[in-house]
Image 1 (cartoon, rainbow, N blue to C red):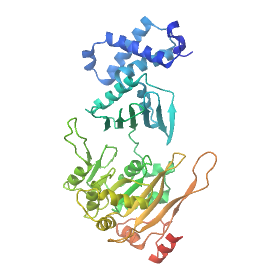
Image 2 (cartoon, one colour; image 1 turned 90 degrees about the vertical axis):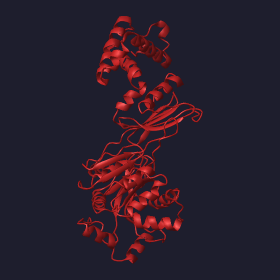
Image 3 (tube, rainbow, N blue to C red; image 1 turned 120 degrees about the horizontal axis):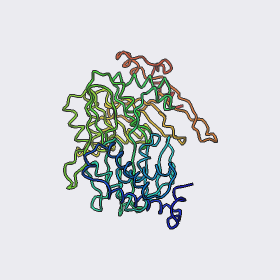
Length: 445
């Protein structure tokens, strides 16, 4: 029998409103019986244990009569409301959930294994949702109100949070929480179907040989996950500086400096942008610079760093193909206050970028490396990409699973020679192109 079915007669309307009302009643009773000053002196875990014990006594004393499971669920919900994030608290503890999306009080969605599903949960009101949002943003010393209706922040536990409220959000307060991505090794990504062994070995050789790599893909395609895996291959003796909007990279090397941008304060002052951090990182004697995502004028600074002695740097960019990634980099670099002709920007990109790794999230939720392309153009000539790996998709099946195979092709001789001089082996399945004509013929097919 459900908790709602065991309520007293007036409460037995069996509605979500009744259940939320019961939680609110016991939350008020709990606050009446605890000493807030004493609670503030306890550690977080001890504070929760204490509240659960006190609330257990209240429920035993005042009812209603509940089964053991229902009693535990009621206590959990009340304590979550008092200490945590209410109905969102269990979702944050569920490791299978990668994203939580709250579209107003009545619609809560989550992403599991790359697929979005709606949950049968709801907040009691806009006010309760706003209380939860305010509790979230207060942990990072931010506020959200009509004068500041948008907040983008990172929680101390690592989750990325975006909030937008009315009047900008017409459906009510909207909250999006992206979970801190798990750190994978490239070998683990093979098990997930993201790439095959030959592609893994090739990408590893490129990173160790200090090729400049751009990871490209749409939102949620796994760019940060792959960037983290690739950065794990950087030799331990090198000084690495990471620059991110919200710190997600989890490098294991001993000599890592992590920099994170800062939004303006409530007075609109104190902002530190990605561009500020990239510029400053150049003064910190980096061996490699890793930018979580380029999205503005900092792209020009990153390209200049890549082409002036910081080989082996990595960055991500939002784009739907390797070709689009190059045009996106060119457009972003033009957003700098330094006005540079597009032809000169093309020269910068041709001299800075060595490899584009394209990621795609398929309908079955699997994120895959769909192309590895080498940039062969030089100077101000038009971009010329040579694809050395592609994922060939097979016809769709009834179960929505995406099947296909990874195909590898011959790499340009200059790339093979650069790998050889760096002491890196080219996986035999790739091979070496004998001439530019051979490459051109293959690309035309």
